[in-house]
Length: 206
View 1 (cartoon, rainbow, N blue to C red):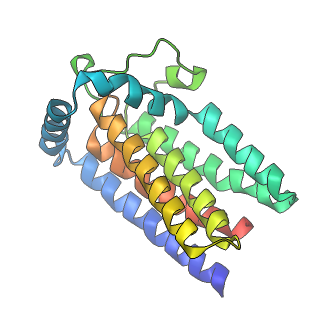
View 2: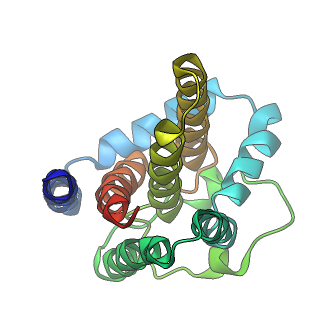
View 3: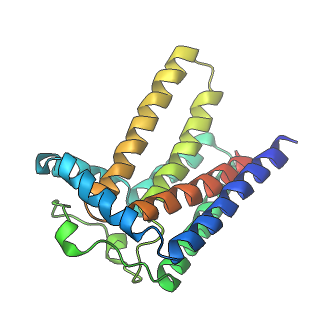
């Protein structure tokens, strides 16, 4: 019964992703995207770009996939490695979206990433920026981590503190996608919905 509820919840978020994708495709939110980026960049000084760029680096596929691998390894259950299946499916959907959607990312004048290092996955540019892969991954991994931590036999207060910390990391990561000019707000929202759907579905393997 619990697995059924998990699958239903994951399905609802996936339907939300599909509906939101069609809204984005109509270009009704283009002005919202532009205005949000301008306002956010105006409010975040350039001196924070290096800090936010670090979060952008941490959200790369190579780091988060490696982190998930160690989580599955730590649990010592072969079934745990199946969490990579919904993550892989989500990335296939991401690539399809970026290939088929006519949704170019922010122009170069908005770009504020200022670290010299990039992982190979960052050079893959299918042509569109929707949905955000970073947003998808960080939400996916956070769901897995939050589930494991909240199942641990530790103090409730410790769980609350950890969840607040995890939420802060997520907000910082997601905001960085926009403030660094790497994604529009709609890209991030799409990534969040896809990450929620695939992340919650992955819980059935834990």
